[in-house]
Amino acid sequence: MMTTVLLAFVGLAGGVAVGSGFVAFITVLDIVPRLHQLSHSPNRIVSSERAITAGVVFGTCVDFFNWHAALPFFVNIVIGLFSGCFVGLLAAALTEVVNVIPILAKRLRLEQWIANLLLAMALGKMAGSLIQWLLTIP
Image (cartoon, rainbow, N blue to C red; front, side):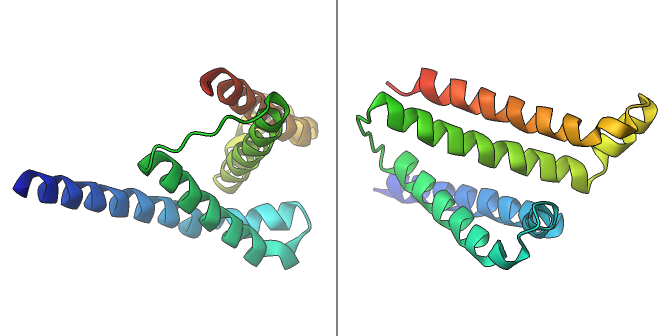
C-alpha cells in the first residue's frame, strides 16, 4: 500500500514538473501570440490556448489510462496531419522567437529565402510526425 502511494506521489510530482515546464515554455517565449501574429489571426489566441490545453489533457488521459482505438487508416492520416501541422508550426514559432532562422539565413547569405526555410522546416516536422503516427499506431 505504501509503495502505491509513493508511486502515485512521484508520478503526480513528475507530471506537475513536466506540465509546469511546458506552460513556462509556451508562456515565457510567447509562442502562441507570436504564432498568431505571424499567421495574421490575433483574434483566435484564446481558441488556440484552449485547444492546446484540451490536447494536453486528452493526450495525458490517453497515455495514463492506456486507451486504444481502432481507427480507419484515413482518420489516422488526418490526425497525423494535424499533429504534424501543430508540431511544425510550434517549432517554426520557437525558432522565429529565438531568432535561429534569421541568424542562420544571414550567415549562409539566404536572407531572401527565410519564408521558404520556415516552410520547409514546418513541412519536414509535419512529414516526420505523420510518418511516426502512421508507423507506431497498430
